[in-house]
Length: 223
Length: 212
View: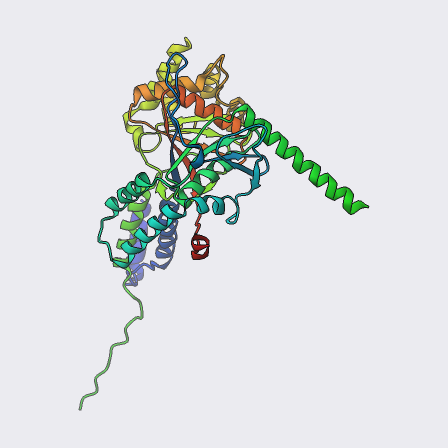
């Protein structure tokens, strides 16, 4: 009923509906959409975390009799992750009477320099190879480049064999850092193994030495 | 000469094509966006130079939170269609003589969050209404040698989906022995290839350092 009444009224007034602009202002809609698009694009691009692959040696079962692989002492470099982001290292084989742990850290002048010193030949080779690829001297596809680098690493017989061990108070961060360092310096052979009792003792000695030295300087400055 | 008069045109620009395009783009990004459910424990991953992106499918993740709690997650992302999650939970229930109803299995499938409760508490966890109750139950997956539930989760995840890749997402400040324990459990189950989830950082070696 109401409809009819309204109709009659408008007829009586002889009013025609005003012909307005049929266009709708789309600016706010476009604003909102661009915002949303930006948001979704950014979240799509940045939400993916990176992964670092690591392969650990297969565990030797207790009932299996397998000799551990023999490696040359002269090429081995032992790295022990210590507490408070300290890194201890010693070359060759651990001897409780002779071996003294050297202390360093994760800075660019720290463990990286030590590793680089020993791995210079291989690192140069890889570096030169990458430069040649970039400058166009060697024409090679991305996929085969990776395998070529791993071949270079395989052929290398001068670089160190790094044994990584973690002391019980080290952090997960240290573990990731040291493996990262291996890939930065391009170490061909590295392995993560358990720490043995000789090394644990050496670390304790080194930490005590540190503490004693710190105490000595503290008392020295007090006097 | 007759004067050419330009009609007074409105300065409006026709935005329809632009809106069309935007709508298309927006639809595309919304549909491709993968929503990861928020994790119950915040984890600050360490940094590395690795540029390998994390894979989308066939992933199981072991989370190690700052307070040494262990979480386990499977079947996130595109795997969801294959319904691995309820299968794995059913297997776990069978081992511990806990019968999960269809409803509970479906609920477990839908919540994509990682498992942080002992299996004995799983029923209560799935029945919990609000997030506070859920968080209170999340004491971490037991990894003691007497009741090594993480090992079983890994075992069943690998049985249900043999192609699964192992991810470890640890907090940077977790004590290493905890990580070592997780690595040992994984190696006991013959998983020797891991992917550590990290954030990207840039490192460069200068010319001097090489030639020095």
